[in-house]
Image 1 (spheres, rainbow, N blue to C red):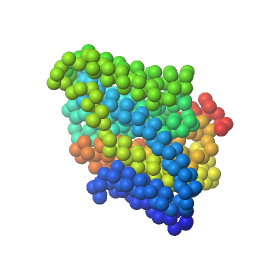
Image 2: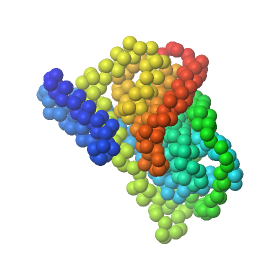
Image 3: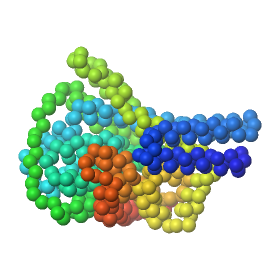
Image 4: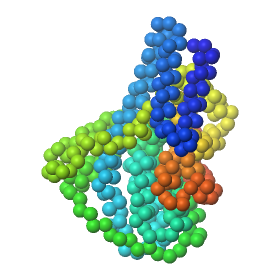
Length: 421
């Protein structure tokens, strides 16, 4: 493959990245731009491979990339189907409102919302966790400034909670599937996540006072609803246990759990007007899955032409603990999925402690800007008064919280797993 073709391929990747960053300006969904340029890149690579033998090699490389993508896709499809059901029924929000006291201080409310967002984001994707938590926030009668503070806190908490479990954040799942960390090791990140969120909540306290009254939810849920809730959380637990003791891939356990969910719907659903369980597959956000497909095709292409060697050199020039911290800051400007995919394809040699620090960095660093994560973009669209500039006023506080969380992650991971590769 000639140098001129490689330059064209890099231009494709840059155009795709610009499409992601400028999505709100050009009004073209990022899934469309990344899928187009990702597919086009591999098409060009086959056309200019240089003979039948090279085409065979290219086919082998494409199949390897598609296998990685398929594993990620199927896992996300299973988790998103569960979440689509729980979200449609409003089960999570209802349970939280019932457990809350009838009246509490606004500061306690901030802590409750932050912890809820963290816990929910461990088992749901960031988009769903943000939507559900913001829906809970809108149920409280608070002033505009407090609502904006709560929204910023929700964004940071959702991104923080997601790093500790593979069901919570795609970047965490990607690093896990690459074999660099195990699920028990990831659970260690729960501690820095709590530390960072608590620091941000305390920094948000000035100017917050008074109490809020909470109306109790009176929704009635069926036995099938609770059976599916139990199946979901049991599947998460079994995913960790089966992987730890028997080396079972998480995707296999979750597909089994999904099939059990379908059986529950078949045998327990007696309401002819209720949406059939299998139909909830249609409610999955396939735009998100197509975005991942396009991004991973592009990153795979960059790996094959050697462009990602630049990232490896970056780690060779800078100590990993500083490089990982900076990667977290970069994730506020560059979507963390392509950034993480590029890092994994560049194959830097890092010890377990640094992989955990990197997981925290790329997962939480996007909280620094409203456009740095899906949670931030959703918050801007759902919370009145939360603009890019309004969010930016709290960026210094978010940076402090991110730095504290990163330092805690690095210290704990190093003390437990050392520096050895």
